[in-house]
Image 1 (cartoon, rainbow, N blue to C red):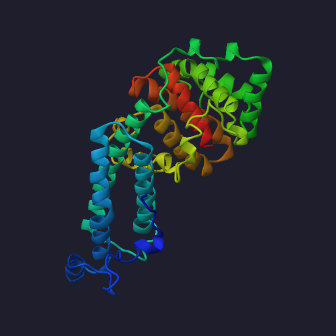
Image 2: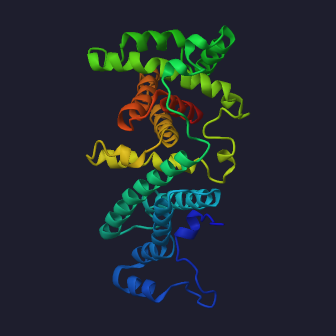
Image 3: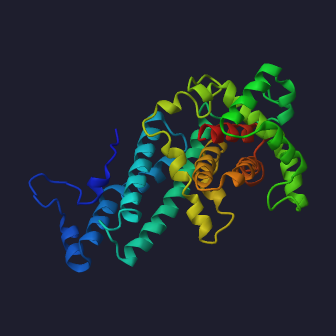
Length: 319
């Protein structure tokens, strides 16, 4: 089984041979003499762990039918990259990379996210996550199909997140979002996505999400949540925002290719954004993030309402 490393591990050379006190390969020694310790450590970890990891991930993507063991391997790779990323970008006082290595880091990360997106799309297609394409009117969680007790549970969960149901309903159906209310395209989107959003929240509540007692309705599934590092599927894919920041709008669908990964990644991103916002802006931005999630699944991924409902369910699980 693949192992995960610590930040301390990534601050020095990988140990290949216990008889070599320095832990340095001949290539690392050459890198050290030419570019310094930070570059040598970085290059050695890329050679030892991350380049082979990407090659293995490509093999799994090409095979197209991921197994449980493949998932464990990919989650470990993702967790290791997140830790390595923190060392490179956050603990830079400890490992200050030359510009050449930083450029390489960015390019590797882009390629990794795209491969991960393809892997999780294959997992979605061939696992219990897959759901038949249906319209929202066929969903057992459509608002009109819920009894009052179920509707009240949805309202209660929203209230636990400081979201008033009547306010959010009014904003959604009128399209009066901060900075967006004057645009007809947004008003139409909000009206279209509102019933899907409600169904997704209702499914999350019915799945046992609020109390942590997951059942067969849960997405990600209860079985998936038993994988070590399962949340890294979403936390690492939330990094796709870095690609968008670089002016490559529309590239999200190259990373987020299935509704489960999309809902989780966009949920992680929303939590991070909401944490730094003023209270008065949080409601509008929560609605925007949730509705953009359903819109992304339906429009960018060209998937059905049922898939968008799944995405909202995972989005809520990240809250």
